[in-house]
Length: 350
Image (tube, rainbow, N blue to C red; front, top):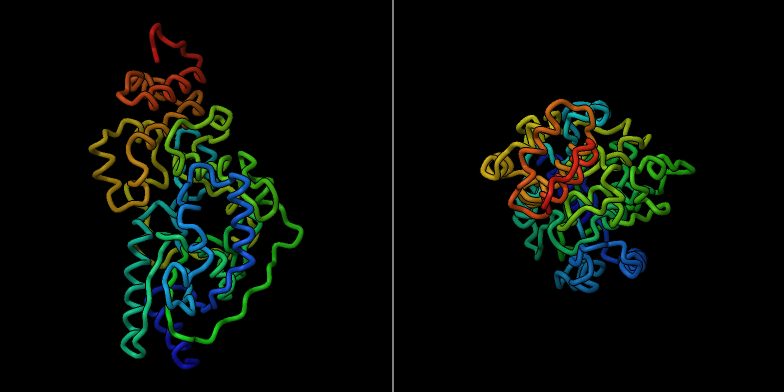
Protein backbone atom coordinates (compact mmCIF):
# COMPACT_ATOMS: atom_id res chain seq x y z
CA UNK A 1 0.00 0.00 0.00
CA UNK A 2 2.90 2.40 0.58
CA UNK A 3 4.06 1.83 -3.01
CA UNK A 4 0.49 2.27 -4.24
CA UNK A 5 0.17 5.58 -2.36
CA UNK A 6 3.37 6.84 -3.96
CA UNK A 7 2.10 5.79 -7.38
CA UNK A 8 -1.25 7.50 -6.83
CA UNK A 9 0.51 10.77 -6.09
CA UNK A 10 2.73 10.46 -9.15
CA UNK A 11 -0.23 9.64 -11.40
CA UNK A 12 -2.17 12.58 -9.96
CA UNK A 13 0.62 14.98 -10.88
CA UNK A 14 0.71 13.51 -14.40
CA UNK A 15 -3.02 14.24 -14.71
CA UNK A 16 -2.48 17.92 -13.90
CA UNK A 17 -3.22 18.06 -10.18
CA UNK A 18 -0.84 20.24 -8.20
CA UNK A 19 -0.81 18.07 -5.10
CA UNK A 20 -2.30 14.80 -3.88
CA UNK A 21 -2.74 13.66 -0.27
CA UNK A 22 -4.39 10.79 1.59
CA UNK A 23 -6.37 10.89 4.82
CA UNK A 24 -8.41 8.64 7.07
CA UNK A 25 -12.13 9.28 7.50
CA UNK A 26 -12.34 10.46 11.11
CA UNK A 27 -13.98 13.89 10.99
CA UNK A 28 -15.28 13.97 14.56
CA UNK A 29 -13.84 17.39 15.35
CA UNK A 30 -15.07 18.90 12.10
CA UNK A 31 -18.52 17.41 12.65
CA UNK A 32 -18.97 19.31 15.91
CA UNK A 33 -18.10 22.57 14.19
CA UNK A 34 -20.46 21.83 11.30
CA UNK A 35 -23.38 21.14 13.63
CA UNK A 36 -22.76 24.35 15.61
CA UNK A 37 -22.62 26.33 12.35
CA UNK A 38 -25.89 24.82 11.17
CA UNK A 39 -27.58 25.37 14.52
CA UNK A 40 -26.67 29.05 14.31
CA UNK A 41 -28.40 29.27 10.91
CA UNK A 42 -25.21 30.40 9.17
CA UNK A 43 -26.04 28.28 6.13
CA UNK A 44 -28.91 30.56 5.15
CA UNK A 45 -31.09 28.93 2.49
CA UNK A 46 -28.52 26.24 1.64
CA UNK A 47 -30.74 23.41 2.85
CA UNK A 48 -28.44 20.86 1.20
CA UNK A 49 -25.95 21.54 3.99
CA UNK A 50 -28.07 19.56 6.43
CA UNK A 51 -30.54 17.44 4.46
CA UNK A 52 -28.10 14.52 4.23
CA UNK A 53 -27.77 14.32 8.00
CA UNK A 54 -24.32 13.28 9.17
CA UNK A 55 -23.25 11.75 5.86
CA UNK A 56 -21.24 14.91 5.20
CA UNK A 57 -18.97 14.31 8.18
CA UNK A 58 -19.05 10.51 8.07
CA UNK A 59 -17.66 9.34 4.71
CA UNK A 60 -18.42 5.67 5.35
CA UNK A 61 -22.11 6.53 5.73
CA UNK A 62 -22.12 8.33 2.40
CA UNK A 63 -20.16 5.59 0.61
CA UNK A 64 -20.23 2.33 2.58
CA UNK A 65 -16.85 0.65 2.79
CA UNK A 66 -14.84 3.86 2.53
CA UNK A 67 -11.56 3.63 4.45
CA UNK A 68 -9.48 6.45 2.96
CA UNK A 69 -9.97 9.69 1.05
CA UNK A 70 -7.59 10.78 -1.70
CA UNK A 71 -7.69 14.59 -1.90
CA UNK A 72 -6.31 16.67 -4.77
CA UNK A 73 -5.95 20.35 -5.53
CA UNK A 74 -5.66 22.21 -8.83
CA UNK A 75 -4.88 25.92 -9.26
CA UNK A 76 -7.27 28.10 -11.25
CA UNK A 77 -6.01 31.68 -10.94
CA UNK A 78 -5.97 33.68 -14.15
CA UNK A 79 -7.44 36.63 -16.00
CA UNK A 80 -7.08 40.38 -15.63
CA UNK A 81 -5.73 41.80 -12.36
CA UNK A 82 -8.55 41.36 -9.84
CA UNK A 83 -7.79 44.48 -7.81
CA UNK A 84 -7.86 46.64 -10.93
CA UNK A 85 -11.24 45.25 -12.00
CA UNK A 86 -12.69 45.94 -8.55
CA UNK A 87 -11.56 49.56 -8.86
CA UNK A 88 -13.48 50.07 -12.13
CA UNK A 89 -17.20 50.54 -11.32
CA UNK A 90 -18.19 50.12 -14.97
CA UNK A 91 -16.61 46.67 -15.14
CA UNK A 92 -18.19 43.44 -13.88
CA UNK A 93 -16.24 41.45 -11.32
CA UNK A 94 -16.60 37.68 -11.58
CA UNK A 95 -14.92 35.47 -9.00
CA UNK A 96 -11.71 34.15 -10.50
CA UNK A 97 -12.79 30.52 -10.18
CA UNK A 98 -15.73 31.06 -12.55
CA UNK A 99 -13.94 32.71 -15.47
CA UNK A 100 -13.31 29.51 -17.39
CA UNK A 101 -14.94 26.13 -17.87
CA UNK A 102 -17.01 24.48 -15.15
CA UNK A 103 -14.47 23.07 -12.72
CA UNK A 104 -16.81 20.23 -11.75
CA UNK A 105 -16.40 18.65 -15.17
CA UNK A 106 -12.69 19.39 -15.51
CA UNK A 107 -11.65 17.88 -12.19
CA UNK A 108 -14.17 15.06 -12.25
CA UNK A 109 -12.86 13.71 -15.56
CA UNK A 110 -9.28 13.70 -14.28
CA UNK A 111 -10.23 12.17 -10.95
CA UNK A 112 -12.09 9.43 -12.81
CA UNK A 113 -8.94 8.72 -14.82
CA UNK A 114 -6.97 8.52 -11.58
CA UNK A 115 -9.49 6.18 -9.96
CA UNK A 116 -9.51 3.96 -13.06
CA UNK A 117 -5.73 3.79 -13.11
CA UNK A 118 -5.70 2.75 -9.47
CA UNK A 119 -8.19 0.01 -10.32
CA UNK A 120 -5.85 -1.45 -12.90
CA UNK A 121 -3.18 -1.98 -10.25
CA UNK A 122 -5.44 -2.64 -7.29
CA UNK A 123 -9.18 -3.09 -7.88
CA UNK A 124 -11.10 -0.98 -5.37
CA UNK A 125 -14.51 0.31 -4.49
CA UNK A 126 -14.59 4.07 -4.94
CA UNK A 127 -16.56 7.19 -5.71
CA UNK A 128 -15.34 10.48 -7.16
CA UNK A 129 -16.45 13.89 -5.85
CA UNK A 130 -15.96 17.49 -6.96
CA UNK A 131 -18.10 19.82 -4.83
CA UNK A 132 -21.08 17.70 -5.84
CA UNK A 133 -22.17 15.80 -2.72
CA UNK A 134 -22.12 16.11 1.09
CA UNK A 135 -18.34 16.06 1.44
CA UNK A 136 -16.28 18.12 3.92
CA UNK A 137 -13.58 18.78 1.35
CA UNK A 138 -11.59 21.35 3.33
CA UNK A 139 -11.47 19.20 6.47
CA UNK A 140 -10.40 16.17 4.44
CA UNK A 141 -7.76 18.09 2.49
CA UNK A 142 -6.42 19.47 5.76
CA UNK A 143 -6.10 15.95 7.17
CA UNK A 144 -4.40 14.89 3.94
CA UNK A 145 -1.69 17.52 4.41
CA UNK A 146 -2.70 19.77 1.50
CA UNK A 147 -2.93 22.83 3.72
CA UNK A 148 -4.79 24.30 6.68
CA UNK A 149 -8.13 26.02 7.11
CA UNK A 150 -7.61 29.78 7.08
CA UNK A 151 -9.58 32.27 9.11
CA UNK A 152 -11.76 32.84 6.03
CA UNK A 153 -12.55 29.06 6.20
CA UNK A 154 -10.86 28.28 2.87
CA UNK A 155 -7.91 25.91 2.60
CA UNK A 156 -4.52 27.62 2.55
CA UNK A 157 -1.24 26.21 1.25
CA UNK A 158 2.22 27.60 1.93
CA UNK A 159 3.13 26.71 -1.64
CA UNK A 160 -0.01 27.88 -3.44
CA UNK A 161 -2.16 30.21 -1.34
CA UNK A 162 -5.87 29.45 -1.77
CA UNK A 163 -6.80 29.96 -5.42
CA UNK A 164 -7.33 26.29 -6.19
CA UNK A 165 -10.07 23.69 -6.51
CA UNK A 166 -10.37 20.55 -4.41
CA UNK A 167 -11.57 17.09 -5.37
CA UNK A 168 -11.78 13.71 -3.70
CA UNK A 169 -11.82 9.97 -4.28
CA UNK A 170 -13.44 7.91 -1.55
CA UNK A 171 -11.80 4.47 -1.64
CA UNK A 172 -11.86 1.23 0.31
CA UNK A 173 -8.10 0.71 -0.07
CA UNK A 174 -6.21 0.78 3.30
CA UNK A 175 -3.64 3.27 2.06
CA UNK A 176 -1.12 4.89 4.44
CA UNK A 177 -2.22 8.39 5.41
CA UNK A 178 -0.38 11.70 5.26
CA UNK A 179 0.18 14.04 8.19
CA UNK A 180 -2.02 17.08 8.67
CA UNK A 181 -0.46 20.50 8.16
CA UNK A 182 -0.09 22.96 11.03
CA UNK A 183 -1.88 26.30 10.60
CA UNK A 184 0.11 29.41 9.67
CA UNK A 185 -2.35 32.29 9.95
CA UNK A 186 -0.88 33.53 13.22
CA UNK A 187 -2.21 36.91 14.33
CA UNK A 188 -3.15 37.97 10.80
CA UNK A 189 -6.77 39.08 10.38
CA UNK A 190 -6.56 40.68 6.92
CA UNK A 191 -9.35 38.51 5.50
CA UNK A 192 -11.71 39.42 8.34
CA UNK A 193 -11.09 43.15 7.88
CA UNK A 194 -11.38 43.00 4.10
CA UNK A 195 -14.79 41.33 3.88
CA UNK A 196 -17.12 43.99 2.41
CA UNK A 197 -20.17 42.74 4.30
CA UNK A 198 -18.58 41.52 7.52
CA UNK A 199 -19.44 37.90 6.70
CA UNK A 200 -16.40 36.51 8.55
CA UNK A 201 -18.07 36.95 11.92
CA UNK A 202 -15.18 35.34 13.83
CA UNK A 203 -11.93 33.63 12.90
CA UNK A 204 -12.77 30.40 11.04
CA UNK A 205 -16.49 31.21 10.96
CA UNK A 206 -18.43 32.65 8.00
CA UNK A 207 -22.08 33.60 8.19
CA UNK A 208 -23.19 32.77 4.67
CA UNK A 209 -26.21 35.05 4.97
CA UNK A 210 -23.84 38.03 4.81
CA UNK A 211 -21.41 36.63 2.24
CA UNK A 212 -21.40 38.14 -1.26
CA UNK A 213 -20.72 34.74 -2.80
CA UNK A 214 -23.85 33.40 -1.11
CA UNK A 215 -25.92 36.48 -1.97
CA UNK A 216 -24.99 36.43 -5.67
CA UNK A 217 -24.89 32.65 -6.24
CA UNK A 218 -26.85 30.65 -3.66
CA UNK A 219 -29.62 33.06 -2.67
CA UNK A 220 -32.62 32.54 -4.95
CA UNK A 221 -34.71 35.52 -3.94
CA UNK A 222 -34.13 39.23 -3.52
CA UNK A 223 -30.79 40.42 -2.18
CA UNK A 224 -31.39 42.23 1.13
CA UNK A 225 -31.10 45.98 0.60
CA UNK A 226 -28.65 46.36 3.46
CA UNK A 227 -26.02 44.51 1.41
CA UNK A 228 -26.66 45.87 -2.09
CA UNK A 229 -24.44 48.94 -1.92
CA UNK A 230 -21.67 46.84 -0.34
CA UNK A 231 -21.64 44.42 -3.26
CA UNK A 232 -20.08 47.02 -5.54
CA UNK A 233 -19.44 45.62 -9.02
CA UNK A 234 -19.26 41.97 -7.92
CA UNK A 235 -21.84 40.14 -10.03
CA UNK A 236 -20.83 36.54 -9.31
CA UNK A 237 -18.98 35.63 -6.15
CA UNK A 238 -16.32 37.53 -4.26
CA UNK A 239 -12.58 37.04 -3.75
CA UNK A 240 -11.76 39.88 -1.36
CA UNK A 241 -10.76 37.65 1.56
CA UNK A 242 -8.36 35.80 -0.72
CA UNK A 243 -6.96 38.85 -2.48
CA UNK A 244 -5.66 40.33 0.77
CA UNK A 245 -4.27 37.08 2.17
CA UNK A 246 -0.46 37.26 2.43
CA UNK A 247 -0.15 33.59 1.49
CA UNK A 248 -1.61 34.30 -1.93
CA UNK A 249 1.63 35.91 -3.00
CA UNK A 250 2.48 32.27 -3.65
CA UNK A 251 -0.71 31.59 -5.63
CA UNK A 252 0.05 29.79 -8.86
CA UNK A 253 -1.55 30.60 -12.22
CA UNK A 254 -3.73 27.92 -13.73
CA UNK A 255 -1.77 25.37 -15.72
CA UNK A 256 -4.93 23.93 -17.28
CA UNK A 257 -6.21 25.67 -20.40
CA UNK A 258 -9.84 25.01 -19.38
CA UNK A 259 -9.59 27.74 -16.76
CA UNK A 260 -8.59 30.45 -19.26
CA UNK A 261 -11.21 33.26 -19.11
CA UNK A 262 -14.04 32.86 -21.62
CA UNK A 263 -16.10 35.56 -23.35
CA UNK A 264 -13.97 38.32 -21.81
CA UNK A 265 -15.51 37.76 -18.38
CA UNK A 266 -12.38 38.93 -16.61
CA UNK A 267 -13.05 42.49 -17.74
CA UNK A 268 -16.49 42.77 -19.35
CA UNK A 269 -18.60 45.92 -18.97
CA UNK A 270 -21.70 45.83 -16.78
CA UNK A 271 -23.85 47.51 -19.41
CA UNK A 272 -22.83 45.01 -22.06
CA UNK A 273 -23.64 42.03 -19.83
CA UNK A 274 -26.96 43.49 -18.67
CA UNK A 275 -28.12 43.80 -22.26
CA UNK A 276 -27.58 40.10 -22.96
CA UNK A 277 -30.81 38.30 -23.77
CA UNK A 278 -31.64 35.01 -22.10
CA UNK A 279 -30.66 33.21 -25.30
CA UNK A 280 -27.24 34.88 -25.35
CA UNK A 281 -26.72 34.14 -21.65
CA UNK A 282 -27.49 30.46 -22.11
CA UNK A 283 -25.35 30.18 -25.25
CA UNK A 284 -22.30 31.82 -23.69
CA UNK A 285 -22.58 30.42 -20.19
CA UNK A 286 -23.11 26.81 -21.21
CA UNK A 287 -20.17 24.90 -19.76
CA UNK A 288 -19.55 27.63 -17.15
CA UNK A 289 -20.28 27.37 -13.41
CA UNK A 290 -22.26 30.61 -13.86
CA UNK A 291 -24.90 28.80 -15.91
CA UNK A 292 -26.49 27.22 -12.84
CA UNK A 293 -27.71 30.51 -11.34
CA UNK A 294 -29.80 31.16 -14.43
CA UNK A 295 -30.60 34.32 -16.35
CA UNK A 296 -32.90 35.83 -13.69
CA UNK A 297 -30.34 35.83 -10.88
CA UNK A 298 -27.62 36.90 -13.32
CA UNK A 299 -29.77 39.92 -14.23
CA UNK A 300 -30.58 40.62 -10.58
CA UNK A 301 -26.89 40.72 -9.70
CA UNK A 302 -25.93 43.02 -12.57
CA UNK A 303 -28.81 45.37 -11.76
CA UNK A 304 -27.38 45.80 -8.27
CA UNK A 305 -23.90 46.45 -9.66
CA UNK A 306 -25.30 49.02 -12.09
CA UNK A 307 -27.02 50.72 -9.17
CA UNK A 308 -23.61 51.06 -7.57
CA UNK A 309 -22.10 52.41 -10.81
CA UNK A 310 -23.20 56.01 -10.28
CA UNK A 311 -21.73 58.25 -12.96
CA UNK A 312 -21.03 55.41 -15.40
CA UNK A 313 -22.18 56.35 -18.93
CA UNK A 314 -25.14 54.31 -20.20
CA UNK A 315 -25.80 52.69 -16.79
CA UNK A 316 -29.15 54.46 -16.39
CA UNK A 317 -30.09 53.77 -20.01
CA UNK A 318 -29.37 50.06 -19.55
CA UNK A 319 -31.45 49.96 -16.39
CA UNK A 320 -34.33 51.86 -17.99
CA UNK A 321 -34.36 49.34 -20.83
CA UNK A 322 -35.36 46.66 -18.34
CA UNK A 323 -37.64 48.67 -16.07
CA UNK A 324 -40.50 46.45 -17.29
CA UNK A 325 -38.60 43.17 -17.16
CA UNK A 326 -40.90 40.09 -17.05
CA UNK A 327 -39.33 39.02 -13.75
CA UNK A 328 -40.75 40.80 -10.68
CA UNK A 329 -37.46 40.20 -8.87
CA UNK A 330 -35.40 41.77 -11.64
CA UNK A 331 -37.81 44.73 -11.85
CA UNK A 332 -37.51 45.37 -8.12
CA UNK A 333 -33.71 45.38 -8.29
CA UNK A 334 -33.76 47.61 -11.37
CA UNK A 335 -35.97 50.14 -9.58
CA UNK A 336 -33.66 50.08 -6.57
CA UNK A 337 -30.70 50.64 -8.87
CA UNK A 338 -32.39 53.57 -10.60
CA UNK A 339 -33.05 55.19 -7.23
CA UNK A 340 -29.31 55.08 -6.54
CA UNK A 341 -28.95 57.24 -9.66
CA UNK A 342 -31.75 59.50 -8.32
CA UNK A 343 -34.16 58.36 -11.03
CA UNK A 344 -37.71 58.50 -9.61
CA UNK A 345 -40.02 55.53 -9.56
CA UNK A 346 -42.70 55.80 -12.23
CA UNK A 347 -46.36 55.79 -11.29
CA UNK A 348 -47.71 52.27 -10.87
CA UNK A 349 -44.27 50.64 -11.06
CA UNK A 350 -43.85 47.46 -9.05
